[in-house]
Structure formats: C-alpha cells, structure tokens
Image (tube, rainbow, N blue to C red):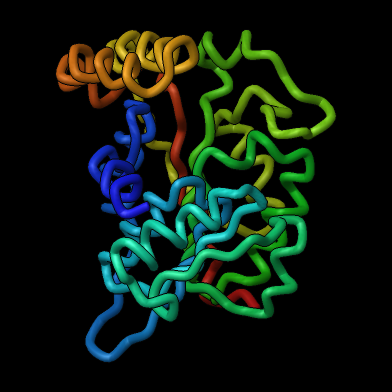
Length: 249
C-alpha cells in the first residue's frame, strides 16, 4: 500500500495537462487566513483532491466532498500517506444536491469541472449561495461550451456521470449565477490549442494501454505545453469567481 501511495503522489496531480493547469492557476485566486484567523473552504466535487490540497497549503481548513469512491482514496493519500490531520483537510462522501445538510458556513467554495455533470445547476448554486458567508467567493470552472471538442461531446441526459451539457459561456455563467445574487467576474480562459493537442494522445494512450503508455506519452508531449498561449481565443475551460455580496444574508 505504501508503494502504491508513493507512486500516486509522484504522479500527482495526474497526467491530464488541463487538470495540471487548473492546479497551477486556480489556487492563486484562493484566499488564505491572516494572523489567528480561521477560514473554511469547501471543495465541491473534489476529484483527486488536488485543489483541496492546494487550499490546505494556503492555511485554510478544507472539506472536500464527492459522491465517488475517490473519497476513500483521498483519505489514504492525504490523511494516511501524507499524515495531514483530518481537522485540517477532510474528505467526505456527500451529494451536492444535499450540501446544505452539512449545516456549515464557508468562506470560499471551489467547484471545478463538476457543474457540467449536474442537471440541477441552479439548485446547487443556490445552495452554494446560502452556505457561503457574506463576502464569500465561489470559484467555478467548467468546460467552455464554445470549444469545438465540447460542442461535439456526447451528452448524458440521464445524469449518470457524463456531461449533461457541453459547458458554459460567460453569458450562461451570468444567467445562472446573477439571479441567485452572485456578482460574477470576467472569465479567465484556461487551456489553448497546443495544450489540447498534447493532451489528446496522452488521454488516448491511457484508454488504450493504461498508465505505462500514458506516462510515456506524457514524458514526450508535456514539455511542449509550455508553448501554449496564456490567453487562448477559444479556451478549453472557463473560470469565473462569483462573490456573495457583503450585505447579503
């Protein structure tokens, strides 16, 4: 088990070049506590825990939730292998449709590459608004609905784990969030054509030959992703920050 966790940590946060970019960029916009301050951050749909871990490194107390079996894997990696106390970084199996039942108020919520899987996006985002403290921030990152790879992506109308929509644009982000009460920032585009050109073969090799082939492809292709533009015309994903006004209750 120790060897498996060591290998997992050596590859963290994984071979997907888009996920690695999100892991670099999004934490730079997360808050961190001042002297003696306690801040609580929710990672809603925490995946492999990469953003939960980044928030923890900034000094936040973090709760990562998911309905998938990755919760137990995250516990083994972060609380077991890395020995991070659960009162600082906790992972919990919990459905986002029932997030208000946690009965907690958060300073920030991270929801990355999750909302495109959820039919009731307005319901979940309304719950996010309710559990955020006044002045709190929702970090929302989703596929760009205008990217050609998402436009043609097969949808999952029954909400069984795939994409129920192709993603969002800045306009649809605002249409979703502003009626709830959020103030929505300008979008930040993540992932350009070079990164996607490199990422596709890595993903394909993983599907065909598993981790060894994917690692070989990653070693060859990942270095080329540094030439990707920082401001892609049609980014792969869009990241916005949605603020709950200070005067809100």
